[in-house]
Image (tube, rainbow, N blue to C red; front, side, top):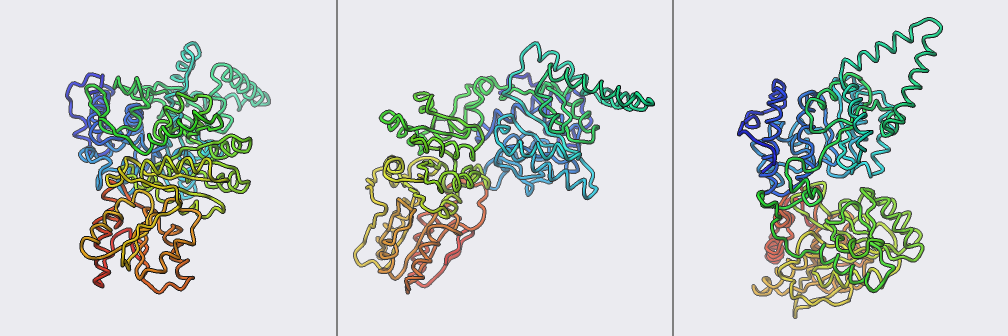
Length: 637
């Protein structure tokens, strides 16, 4: 439970829309904040999700909805994982226990879910650019309302945020950027003066008086304009001395207000009222505590940033088993013990990618570059150029942000950069913006790339060594979220790019790679038991394409390719084209994913894509009986 006292009020139960909080007093809003914190803790302990970031923005979100009127006013959340409080205040409290469940509430903003969610956001540092465009559209079309972008200081490590600031500050549109600062430190002496001045500056009366005074001075004949300019020059110099952070944003064109206490409703409401009255780009700097109100999250906010289920009384996370990420981290540590050239790079995801132990053991060779995936790749290329062995551990969905750097800075010059691609394939509850379905398709467009896709832990260990030592140029090892498939725990892999499990008299060939080998293998066993003989071709090094695969397929009457990835540009599509060019006369089916995959359990996602063992078995059996089934997301060709 939260550490704040809850008097068992039920304000949250009575909120059906943001309008329901307009008439609440500060005291009542404070009680509402306590209820919201309890709801966040109790719900996320069951569903998993992003806790500490949402605990930190409770008062901030309440103040925003107190001052502004969505959907006329629009909120853009960055990264989007801090929008849980917003969902509770916009008519979704009764559905909150479905958070991140299939068919339930998304863990990110979703305009299809509510008119109060203005822009989908699952990747970092995008809010200012999006809000800039939305505010400009309002100005061009004469629409009412203000656009508010909420961005954390962590997301400010991404370069796109500064591209957005540079353009938005010059726009003169009704745009407010809220910098949710839960990491930058402000020294006590400067902080006291800055907060005091911020309180004064945030009051609407002060804003009006300042504007009136400036206009009066400027209207004095002959000397008015020079006097006003001298005063402005003196004020700017003084502000640079007293709190330099404001000058950075003001030089980019923003009116700076702050820093404000992000847990003081009065200060926040005054700040938003002042920012709205300025009717131009404003940077509202808000200092918050990540994990506020729950001692375990305040003490260790990184652990509770994204967490699975936990015990609310003790704060202890539910036991977690071994996973591909942890096996990767252990193997990289083992290799680094023997080779001082090996370096690890992460883009603000050290824990998620299994690099915690590497960072502890080799702090001088572990680099967290912040939310800057493009920089991470070019940085890795620089390391490789001078003979280091860089391994960039990154989620598949975030690797998409660095395509240009992969192509131009690593691949063209042939730098030996290794990409450890975590969360490849369907990832489950994180939803549509986080599915790892596109890495194979876009890496396949890059000449000279080598890509491994292990199906089990032992293969991951083998493939990581191969990617580091056995190939040149750009290499990648991609592996799924979670643990080793049950059917592969005793599987003994080899070092070959592919393995043919040939069945006597088989006229049907099943091809796959990665963890889906477990499902294909299980389906093949069941088909054989029912009298349908099938062979299985298991791919481990999926790029470059091997001519041998086509040679093998040409000897079968029916060939099926099962791919846990997007169809367009996938390996299955490429093999189909090769077989077509080689005059293959048999039936070829490519079962892959079309379109975006929403939030779902991983197993459910595989079932809907026709990639689970039962679906594979039914498809092959139906074809042998001249029947056909087509499933959503997975059409066959």
